[in-house]
Amino acid sequence: MKNIDIFVHEKYNKADYEKVAEHIYKTYDDFMKSDCFVTSLKFVQEPELGEGDSPRNISQYPLEDVLEKFYVAIQDFYEDLNYTSDETCYLEFSASNMEDIQKLLGIVNKHVYNKEDGDYVELVIE
Image (cartoon, rainbow, N blue to C red; front, top):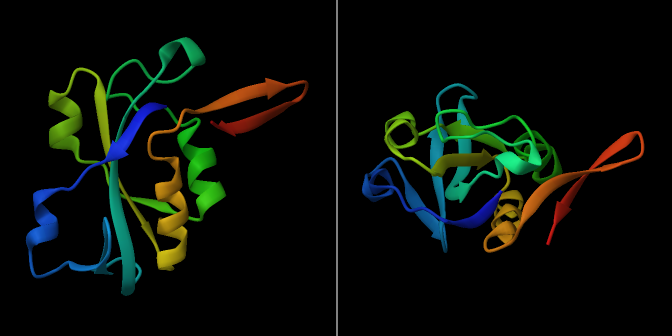
């Protein structure tokens, strides 16, 4: 994952979303039946590192490792954007704690990828 940046979707201007910090919104999660905090990111995958080759095919890794590391989940896949974009992927992330979303935002402008280290795969953020 490279060229990671903030994506502010127009839905964040609706009454269902309350801006609680820079690029962080509070909303109600119907599935979990509780409030959650969300943010959206856009990024480019790197097929040469084993990632998907288009936004229609967002690879499981390193995304799954990012979700685990920051205790976040995917809230919205933005299918309309991902199906019309040639290179840029769009995802909304959610967490029950605002601090987890704040930590996730730390990957903005970083390079995130998986690196094999013997029998293990390590998430690298640089």
